[in-house]
Image (cartoon, rainbow, N blue to C red; front, side, top):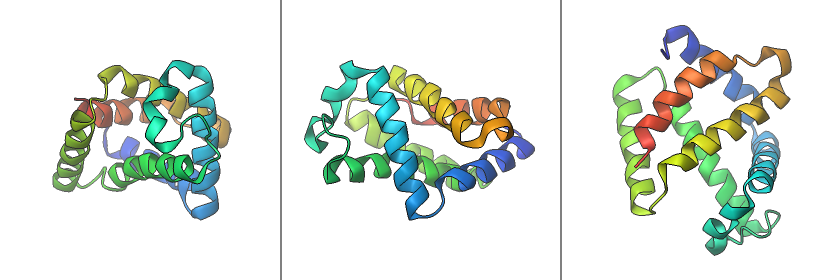
Length: 141
């Protein structure tokens, strides 16, 4: 259950790791480097943004856009109507692109790993697990 306290924790912890231009760029690079290292078979999904070179400006911009989408959802976790509309918007985008539902599970696993690295003992994995489950369920095609 992604209750009020868990939503607060997720928002607060996300802000710690993803606020400010430097943090966004650093977090994105770390995330995608690990994600594509762990899932080299998915590099081809990012061909149009030069996924074979995560340091390219095209991929850097794409990586930040993806995480900014997550940021937009986390930012409205406690605003039910806006949250629902934002999830529907992202679901439509991912459905149109043919994104497979299982990619969200891979994304979540990687996200938790990176958050754990960044937040250390302050990482509330239970809060993230429960709230990310709601987010992913709302976006999965």
